[in-house]
Image 1 (cartoon, helix red, strand yellow):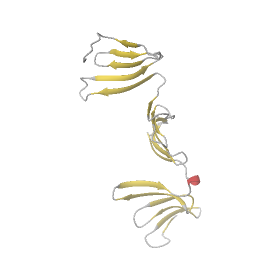
Image 2: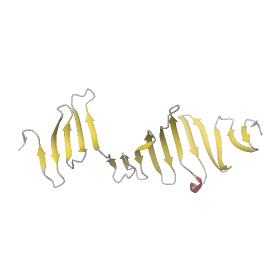
Image 3: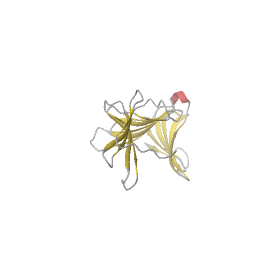
Image 4: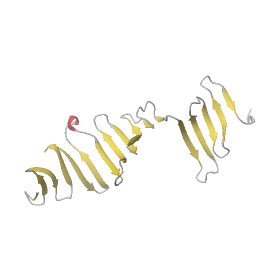
Amino acid sequence: FLESPSSNIMTFTTNAVERMRMDSSGNLKLAITNATSNTVIGKDGTGMYMETSGSTAALSDMRFQARSTGAGSYSYVQIKPSTQTLLFGTSSSTRIFVNSTGNVSVGDTTAQRKFNVIDTTDAWIRISATNYTSDWLIGTAGSDTKFKIYSQTAAATRLAITPTGEVEISEDLVLIGK
């Protein structure tokens, strides 16, 4: 039912229980379990916001997600108040994870260091000029345990370091300096 229990307030009820309320500022309040724990969707001078209030124990995850029509997978941004973490996902899987100390993981949810790139096959970070005249990868490939600097422009590994500390250089070694 649509009701207006007082001026400048509109409520929506089902089974005689208020489920949603719109106030005179246009804020939309969605009840979670009781009147002191709710979600407010509104806008202020800087844009839209969504906030959940109540005790920390009462707060559940907040998820913003987009699902393609008829498709089973979705993309999302998820906030987890209980662990103070933030997740970004595509194709129904977490792709970026930020923990409570600000550590970031791409590819998993461990975030053991400030920035982590984890993958089951290749873990590369790409560094490139906007016109791709200089296109580099740093990281590891497949079951190869070497750390590599790879030129995509030349399609060749330029430097590799093994887990034992051996250094491999693929071209002539040129030393400049004293």
